[in-house]
Structure formats: C-alpha cells, structure tokens
Length: 223
Image 1 (cartoon, one colour):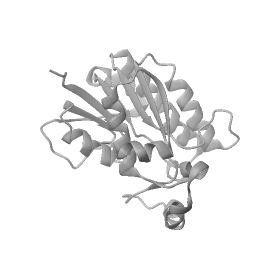
Image 2 (cartoon, one colour):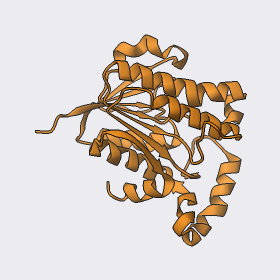
Image 3 (cartoon, helix red, strand yellow):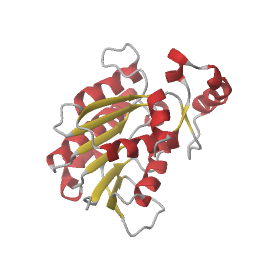
Image 4 (cartoon, helix red, strand yellow):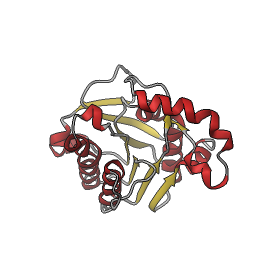
C-alpha cells in the first residue's frame, strides 16, 4: 500500500496557491495538509491544519512544519511590497528560509513557483531575485526539487494588478499564434501551474528539475 503523506503549502491565499490547496485537499496522496501563512484561510477541512506564522521568524515554527512534500507559492510585487528590499524579503528570504527549515525537518520534496526569465546574473531586478532564490533553494538536501517558471499567469486574483490584467487580455487572444520556440511565452492559467506541481510531486523523480511554462501547460493535462 502506498504511503499516505503530509503536504505543507506556503502562500495558499495567492493565485496559484488557492488552486493548489484545493487540489491537495482532494488528493488521496495526502492525509494532512499544513498551510502556513500570515492569516487564516476561510477554509475548514478535516485534513487541513492551519499554522499562522511570522515569516520573519519562520525557524521558530519548525516543530509544526514537518511534512513530506513542501509546496511554496510565496510571492509579491514591488508595488505591493512597497520597496525592493521588502520584495526581496518575500520572494527570496522567506522562500529560502522555508526550504532550509523544512529540509532540516526531513522534507523529501520541495516544489516552488518562480518565473520565466529567472537568472541570478540578470540586470532585471525581478528576474535576478527569482534566480537567486532558485540558486539558494537548490543548495538544500531535498531528494527532489522542482522549480516552476510560468510566463504571464492568468486567473482571477483577489487583489487588483492592472498591468498584469491588461497584459493577460492582450496576450490571451494571441496564444494560438505562439507555436514552436514561442510556445514557452504563452500565458498560462494559474490552475495549470497548481496541477503541474501536484503532478510533479506524484512522480517523485529524484534530482533538480526546472519546468518552463510550455511544459507546465502540458503537464497540467496529465493530472
């Protein structure tokens, strides 16, 4: 009989995380879902264990963060964060400290949402931060590390992001023309990213894996 596992998700209130936690709660793979966040989610489920945490002191909550598979959907924007320093803290420091903390508690897999263009050597601040996050997460001793690099994310957000909403409206009608090398630039539904993350976790493939946007869209259909 296959072992029933515990999943931990950070960022379940976000666009991808909201879809992902629904999938995790429905999945027979997991008997317990630990959600870590700054605020309580409007969810009640017998499998759900909500942990309200201060991400600035994430290591203080290590005893409550024991899981097999860790899903990280943390992320913000510079506008919402208020400064480049705060953006870096959310998209790099919180993510890497979550990885370090859960690795020390014996987590087997770490799956994280990054972004297309992530590169620690990039001159674009956003891409540089994402690239540094990827680099540092991969230093942790997980059996499997999966990094998802979606292009423009589509979906209904609780918060208003005018630029991204406009880009989505402009890009979506052009998706059919994006074939071959351009396919990786197609906008991708947030739900597809969530499905791809769960599908990758189920495969349990050892090693470090980068999932570009076009692969994410294809993998999502396999769940």
